[in-house]
Image (cartoon, rainbow, N blue to C red):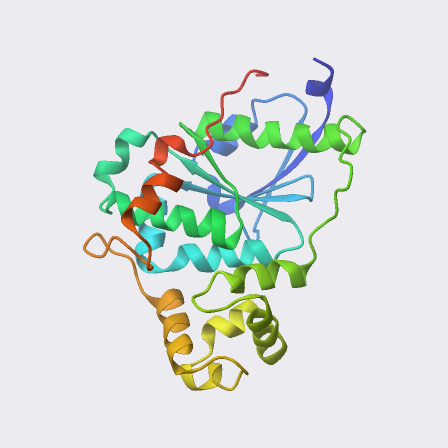
Length: 251
């Protein structure tokens, strides 16, 4: 196919060398692959998209130790589009040491609140194919393959406000005030309860809820990281199997 002849530029983080994805990328034609240290994400595609790849085990550990949401916020604040690829078969979820509800809650936070799309792959080979597939779609759009009427890039301010609006008791106006006061999402998250209360409309109750939402660790003994009806989780995300899966038809 003609689009398979497009050269895709991919940068892989050097810490991914043992994951199996780089080896698979090297076997795919018309992929210009370079390996170096990336400050955000594991793979960069065509200088447009950042990919964070996590196995099911990596994902569970990053939820428990608190790294996941910080990584996702960094990606959301990047000038590039961020994507999380969750790698592994759903049948492995019982072996990773975290409750199903905790993983569902984390995925809802990543995709709906922070705004990072979550894609699924079965193994490193499929992850590599998915990365290349994304690159080819990008190149196809760049070369006029898809008309995107009315498309407008999202600015940094929009992204930051969108993230903060997902915090308890924070709507659009309070999100703007928080950004005006602290300058970044990271600074808001790092702020203490007293500092948060210096923002108009942020009382002690809301400040405490914000600190709880961004600092509470999720463990297998505490499966629900934020207030929600149990049925709402099932309605939005029935299980890991329901997350967008990828089946390559072009490789």
